[in-house]
Image (cartoon, rainbow, N blue to C red):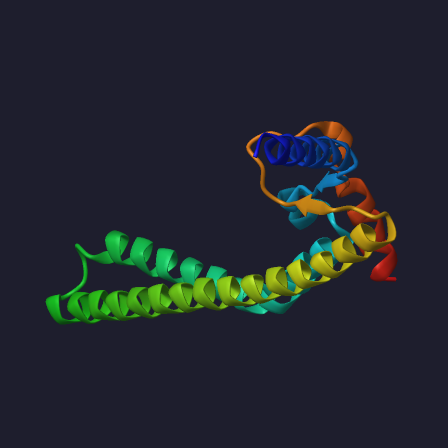
Length: 169
């Protein structure tokens, strides 16, 4: 019985020392997802595409806002000299234009957010493919995207940004 305990203890010690050696060889990397979203070539391209795609609607909203402000200023200026029915008609028109403007503004924001989320999802997929390629080619055991703390020496964000830029050409 005593001899068996010695063998089990020796085996556990060998296993523990093998685990310690193996743990020392673990390769860990970190990617700053916010930097990928802010600084990557595909993110910049997507941002410009969204700006171009939504520019006409943004201009239309600005035009409508100017129209509402102009009508409101004219109504305030002329309200004392207008008859009651004309004043009410202009106030109703102003209310209708304001509601229409608010609806258009809400739809614009919703559509823009939807498209932005689609573009961010596509960027995340591309970044994940690049991260996986780097992990496999450079023999990383794990690459983290979120961490409470990380050492700059394990940060591979610059390599991912460079690979994304090359991937997008």
